[in-house]
Length: 291
Image (tube, rainbow, N blue to C red):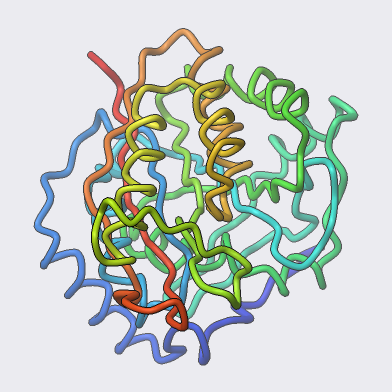
């Protein structure tokens, strides 16, 4: 029986008008003007409302050559629902204003059989925006290509569980028909986020935030999950997708394909100049097979 996850954030976080949505996505992809490469096997991309992060996200999704890909693993953080595990969607289809994405029920069953995942209630699924904000871009980029998605909500997983899920999912990286879409915004800065780390040596606050984010991005590019863990422990940077990123780094560490992450774009929602200001950072990266 079909079980539909509605595009619950369409009409608020992004337009629910199909023509307008296609026009916006096309515009951002054109502006990013990136060459499509069959070696791009995954992306890290933001998940804020499109008026904030839509343009930045194009630098991740614009790299994708959809030709040989038939399955997309979608890893997103949980903003509203607490779980110490990873949770699988119980839907059979994810709707977007510009086309529906069927869930790969076979792989969901395979993952379920490991006993390591919990199941996500449809209400939890629809309340969460982290994976939904990737869907219109995926629907656009993979238009005309028969793909299925495997949505995985990554909870507040411990360091041990990041390793466990990374090992468990690593084998899927070695199949070149699989693609990975990892959802994360970067620093959430300001008193409303309870995070006001400021290193005056960089000058303006927004420059200090940028230096902090870039340090994290450089570490992610090394592919070392332990160094990323240490960085998060040292600076407590409010990267909301830190668990999905960590699981992804453990996947890359445990698979046999050599894959390198490279960041291609960095933006901030606004430039913080005083301690009363706030901003969220957006970073887009492509994970390429080193052939």
